[in-house]
Amino acid sequence: MVAAVCSLAFLAYPGTAVNPFLGAAVVTALVLVVAAADALVGTAPGLFEIQRRHPPVVVAGREAELRWTVRSGAARRVVLEVADSPAPSLRARSRRFRVVIPRNSVANVTTTFEPMRRGHFVLDRVALRIHGRLGLGARQREVPLRTELRVHPPFRSAREAELRIRRARILEVGTRSARGLGGGTEFEQLREYGPDDEFRRIDWTATARVGKPVVRTYRAERNQRVLVLLDNGRVMAGRVGGVPRVEHAMDAAMMLTAVATRLGDRCGMVAFDTEVRSVVPPARRSDQLARVTEAMYALEPALSESDYSGAFTEVVSRFRRRAMLVVVSDLLEQAVTDSLVPALPLITRTHLVVVAGVTDPAVDAWARGPVADDDEVFRRVAAVRALQTRRRAAAQLSALGAIVIDAPPGRLAVDLADAYLQVKTTGRL
Image 1 (spheres, one colour):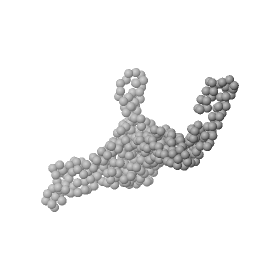
Image 2 (cartoon, one colour):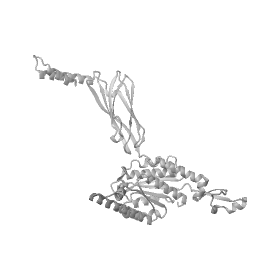
Image 3 (cartoon, one colour):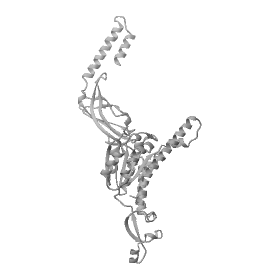
Image 4 (tube, helix red, strand yellow):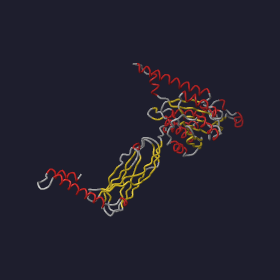
């Protein structure tokens, strides 16, 4: 820039003794030499140490902090520019910064980022540019700096999960509600008969012993097993409500894990497509939700159909004790008829099976909406047929003994949690 300005000035006021173009070239060369010398005699990049800090795990859609610390070993004040390499989907507010570091000192720079999508990210390098004393030249160097970041899917149904946990505990502990349910299969206690108790719950032996009516109370059994089978095949790549189907399935898996473990049951997860990708055995641990989330956060749907038979065979061999198996997939008739229905008897012999999918509200709207032209007629016919095929697929699964849930976005996880609570209340597991 300085060379260009000097050259233009020389051309504008050339004088008479020297060829103006030759003079401009000489000035440009001199300035470039000075700039190069300024860069060469400047501070060496090796005198700087840089660190990058961020949380190892963040949640998609939530803001987190990204911090750089630059330590200078130079014996003078230095102007330094740093360019980092976060992926665009991490949405860092700033990837470049300029900092003035006093001699033998440390500078800290902080920004924020908000990941757009889940997955595993590697930040592997930064570029340093050190300006010379005169500010005419600079030395630049790429520095390897590897940090890894895991972006987990958001738990969209967390609030609904907490509401259901509270409600289930109230129904279990609250006397009036517990008596009204009439559910639960595990004996809890004997207590005095009350006006809201059912007559059939009177324990006549205990009543005769104490001389006044006594009833038996029950609670839902604990330490039962719930296993989410998460389909990671081609059908789960499509988006519903702007979110991939597989992420609706992840939200459902997190919901069931949170509710079941907090209510004293064991919950786990198996993710599969053409093969089993990850397994989290059912457990009742305080960190089970984190373990399930960690096991599925980096899943990307396969480009081929899932092998239900292979996945179910492995599940049966690993988990022999009766459990509630929740298969989260998509209720496409062809996939259900060709793959899921033939494989379902492998797990219905021993386990209580729930098959769940997320339906597209747009298709439902097209099937019910007004028709104004030929294009809308064709779209409505296609939508009606799509809904009919889903109903036929659900009917096939129900005929094999599965509980079927086909819910819109935002309801899949909630409806699955309600189905789980209903199963516990009625003692079906």
